[in-house]
Length: 315
Image (cartoon, rainbow, N blue to C red):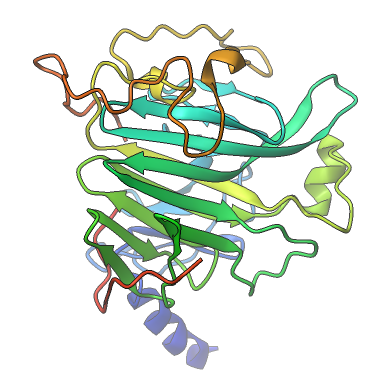
């Protein structure tokens, strides 16, 4: 048993940029600064039994999907105000998650018709607009899920991004990406604007059975689980998630009900993944009122860029 800990320790050390990490059914602190907690497996909480993370400061596992800025499952959001809500949108359509003068983030929803009178939906991809650039993060369509396969597709300005396991990636476009694991998980930072932790996950047979999704063998509906940490937002921020970071936001969902629903699909709808044409869009507005731009948050062809030996420090 002792011999197994040597390669495991080496693997964990190679990811010291990230304070948390995931092992199948276990979470572990990945920052050696917290020596008493570092690399010690922690059992994942009941709310996320397969995948979890660990707060190194208190050495306790937690569900990333329960933190502010999370977008997971049949889109389940945790707003900047800490409140949980669902936004189902519509399958095969695109919706604005965040819009602000310097950044705009859309999501493409996939899904299935349900007997409940609405679509079962999940976020298959996001399109991030910043400056003149377009970043794509998406889950590939997968029939049978294999943990060893990398199903995360990344592009910057239409050119494919390929990052070796354990490496950092930096672009002249004020963008850096770090692989969290060998496959299916990355952390992205648009300098000074946002950090995004993205993971590709499938709908499991158990999830399909419990929720009645009716997932078939030809498509496991691989999708993204996301955590956003906004570094600089103006008070103009809007979008399904973005509005909850506005200092003037007052929640319109019924807090305390089993499934609090956020409406407004029409005003958040966009014509395509990289369109900033939703009704509430303010991307590209150059004039921002005095006092804005402060932190309002709590928490194809291969591109030729620099691949760093030392991971970037993110999240």
